[in-house]
Length: 285
Image (cartoon, rainbow, N blue to C red; front, side, top):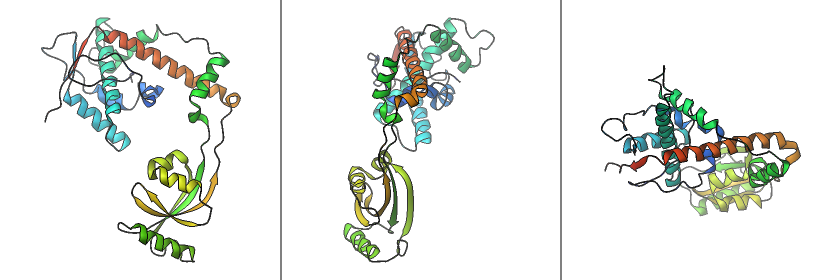
């Protein structure tokens, strides 16, 4: 597969590149995920009468990127994520055209992916890693500590009442549970093991996460969440554990190497893109 990187919005020339969301710089993103399907769009939307130095990011490109993102993540992309997806497509188009200009398609004219990959190999040949000193790696480690630290984790149960229970009905049910009624007597019982703190925030919201953090194990509670009131009992919790740089130095070195090369690659493709006039078509209404 070939490499990929991020994009822009509006129906005009693109502004200077901005820092991209962290997930767009994950190394495997350059060879997997969205790119494989975006390659299939090929020149269907950029061929024909358009000038050689004009690239049009059409409504079809946006729609295909949106559908691929939704299929992968189960939701619509945000405006920031849509900008990054457009740039993924744009960078591949730039690499494809640069590959053709360098005649890297010789003997392989029908395969866009291989042309892009060959062009990317030329770009990669100009990248050079700075020295990976302990100071550099420690700085990277501290800046990305959330990736390496072991988060606080929670084991808990949720008794799910049917329909759309009110705060009053959940509190009444919690009183029953604390007085000996089995958790699955009137509701479905869900058991969660080792749920990290960030997952609680994403699934239930900040108020729920804070309340569960301070809850006493073994006591049923009525807690507010994004989707209404919940009957929840904390079973156990484990505190967050900071990671050790010395233990993870090899992992940190690999992550730093991948991210640094990806940033250099992205910057090099951005320079190549300056020779093109890039336009974004308005979505059809």
